[in-house]
Amino acid sequence: MVGRKLISWVTALFRYVLGRRARRLYTAVFLLFVALSSVLRYRSYVLTRRIQAVLSGLAQVRADQTTEAQLQTLVPYLVGRDIHTQDGFDRQYCVSITNDEGGREMMHQMGWVPEFFFSLWPPPVSDRPVEDKWAAMPFPFRVAYVLGWRHLSFGACVNVLKGVVSSTSYGLEPDVFLGWPASLLVFVHSTHGFWMRGTPVTIQSLDDESPDFRFSRPFSWFAGIDSTLTVAYTPNAPPELIAHAFRVDLSCFWEIRGCDSVRSVVPLLLADRQGLADATAQRLRSANPCPDRILDGRVRTLPDLNAALLEVVNSRSEEVNEGDRTHETVTDYRLREVIRGHVDAAEIAAMHYRRAIPSPTVEMQNPFRPSYPKPGDRFLFFSGATFDSCRIVQATPSAELVVRTAVPAPKRREDQVGQGLM
Image (cartoon, rainbow, N blue to C red; front, side):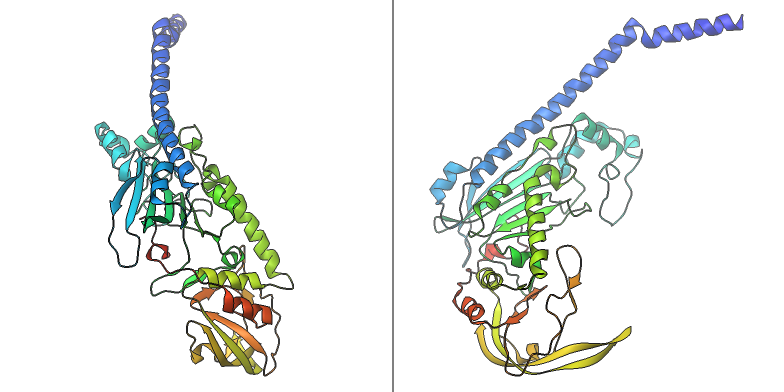
């Protein structure tokens, strides 16, 4: 008797769950899911097409060449405004394409969701960079992300000086908004040189290898070397590298996978960065780790560079005790001539030999072996920036000629390191 009742209950439940009405309900829910997801993804797709149109136009703009009239023809959606400065640009054109200005649109759309759902699987509270974007999103945001919602925010600006383009920039945020200040996924800007107000610019060995096309890491709430990328290029940068900076794949903003890293958006730039890192490591391990082209790039791109000709007074070995007792080579120099900028005598007194230098991957042994320069030997000394390598190089005739004849870039306000998207 009990068995028959159990069987009848199971049969009724089976008909209830898999019956005709249930199947219709499941089909309706599935179609609703597909429709809603398609609408959200199509909206993102339309915005990415507008962004691609802007990027295509920006790729054709050349600083100090493209006129203001040509700019308005090449780049769509730009809105101009006058800016009055003493030494900067006098007009600026900008465009903003977004579906979630400052993260407010998403919160507004979620206003109807009960607070209870936000307390389900809440994101952890931490001041450390985020390792997993899924863990950083409240539950309703995760559901929206699965449906196809993506935070999409793009901005670009072009500065004009006396009727000619002076600089360009664009920034793209990640597909998840975590708060202010906003993270950047990709930031690309043109420049004439690199300088900072009151603080020396840090010049990595990778920057020396490619002075006209440099990589760095902007601010981001996300952890990982591939979570964000900045590119700064000068008018002398190789055209193929500049083209890679505007070849952006935005399909991850409307496809299922989402944008997990810079690799999803600008894979060509990551390959370029790796190629330059390999070339840098190879150069530092070669017989000529500081070739003349490195010095030429410094003079051209660092407006605040100081360069001086030094002469060795004496060199000696000094015992130091840093955990283990060891000996270091210390050299005293005499200032023969200041070639560029200004150099203090205190800067060149008792210089210690560095046993290790930073490299694009890990710290490596100084490519210059310890030696004792002879009195009268001449070297070129560089300051005005913090150099990872090649701060002092032998003053060969060709090296001196390069430092004396290379033309420095103009020092413009918009080229200041850290200015960001204006």
